[in-house]
Image 1: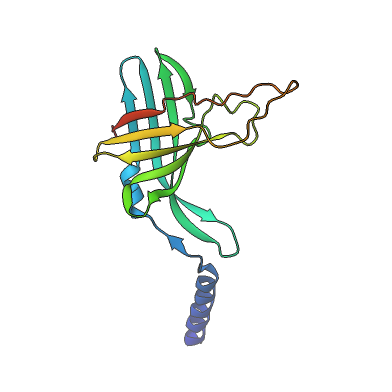
Image 2: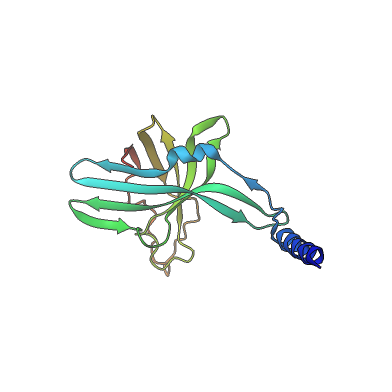
Length: 174
């Protein structure tokens, strides 16, 4: 009788373990961890800070998979007045990975300029790169995303400029 109970327990345990297995591939990108942390530019009057972390992301499709990517937030202050902050709100930085597989020190990212998102669904996405210059410094570069500019008598002019610093050297503080 004891033997039957043990066999039953082991059978039920193996069934639930089998039900929990996940055959979805997971592609790690360990070199992304170099970019994690708080990065800051501050010259006394202008301050720009990004906070980045590596996140495991599920990608749907015919053959779904998980992959590591960088996500983050930003704060932009000028003359002690906060112009933009995504801290505690939606992420404004997202990276799919490296600019090219031969350069593990430079990533591409998409950026949401909070000043341009008013009324835009989805919000316009700026394009940028973050390149590690050393373990504690990185070059931030950003440009407006691609798109179509509509002009006409009944069309309100759109704002196509980036409202955060576009080329900076950031220092890692955490």
